[in-house]
Image (cartoon, rainbow, N blue to C red; front, side, top):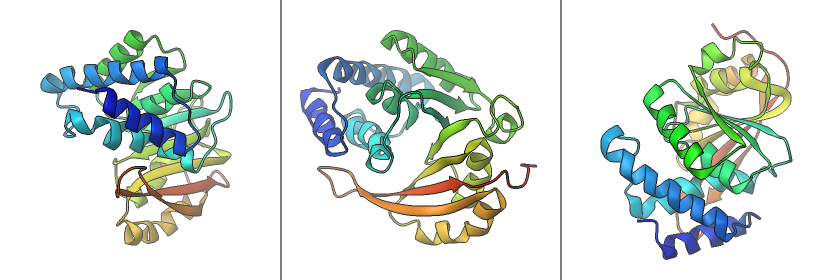
Length: 228
């Protein structure tokens, strides 16, 4: 269960990155954790045990705040959201963000729609489809200020999924493990081909742990080649 100790760790960790989580927001995180634990038995949404949700799902998702300051009305697309990570925790913690959760599996989106309704969230919605297909639609191509993905694919593939959906001047951000340096270097040609540049690689340690992450920030410069 997502108990008071987990709530306190999440609150303290988020504060490290300038995010203040009030009691109502922590209650929503608790409700999300309860729904995830209950539905996971049927839907196989995550392999993370419930006692680690606070750190390995919620706090890990909020790591974006260590490198990007959310602005009112900023549009964020979470590609391959799965059980809602990182987009749903970001929507909970940063209610001024406009968040879309994209996934190709309807059962996951049905779960997320249930969570959104249960928590009364108005700044987040789901979208069914594959990134390469959604990027061909005028309403989504180059439409988002931030396009993020966590534990979805290798960096070379992600460049072709994330950058076509990112506004010129916007950021695509890939959540990677602390040991992904070679993978990132191998993706530089693909990043350029899709109109991006490697702005920086941020090394993050989750507060209160020794867990290292890399956030790979790609700046969208131009349209690049179309996704085939």
